[in-house]
Amino acid sequence: MDKNLIKELANYTHHAEKEKQEILKITAELYPELTIEEAYLVQEELIKQKLEKGSKIIGPKMGITSEAKMKQMNVDDPIYGYVFDYMVINEGDSISISDYIHPKVEPEIGFILSRDLEGPGVTPLDVLRSTEYVFPAIEIIDSRYENFNFTLPDVIADNTSAAGAVFGTNLKRPESLELDVVGVTLSINGEIQALGAGAAVLGHPANSVARLANMLAKKGEKVKAGQPILTGGITAAVRLSPGDYVSAKYGGLGDISFFVKE
Ligand code: OOG
Ligand code: MG
Image (cartoon, rainbow, N blue to C red):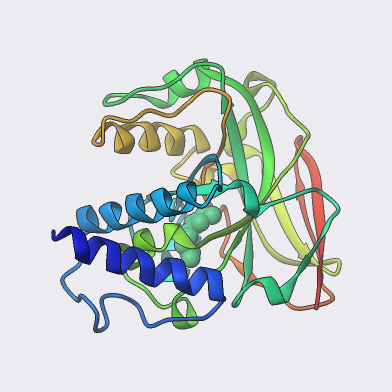
């Protein structure tokens, strides 16, 4: 793929994010033949541009790891992207809806590793043995594409819709919980909008981290110790509106919440 085209496509999604302006998906007109491999090259360029601007990577995120997400987004394979420092929201804080295009939230389970994991061949057991902590999280996704309408290559080239993350501070040792049966409810203004359990994420969230390690291995990269890793939305994502009080309640992992302002 031509270097200039990679740059052009990275500029396209990057600009939309910066200007909070929705765009037509890349595969609609700009470059219909975009493949998954090419999309990761575009994502790499996008990440490079963000790093050059002074933004810092906080950790990787997996996406499209549950049936609920596959159905909602009409795509069917796990993908990865990165959460940056400017996306992090503290528990109990407020976000401004005007900082986003059409934000949605989804409850996730996070991991922090005690040692790097390098694929290929990483198993969920390897992941659990290398996990220091697990924690509850809410991800804010904000596809830069009109109506969240995209194909897998499109969403990869858009850093998998990453826009915000609330990392819960209730860290637990992985052996203290059975993550597949950890339940979660996602509520807006006290009303449950979605619910699920850890098993929704590829059978067990540790599978998602293993998958990430094995995907990164194709680029000669690894999952690094100490970084928070998001394993993917357990439920379908829920649209936000000004005035919302968002809370996710997890069995054994506590609660996290934040507010949405104008
Ligand atoms: C893509 C991002 C998917 C997840 O957890 O499944 C994702 C999207 O749904 O816009 O973060
Ligand atoms: Mg997500």
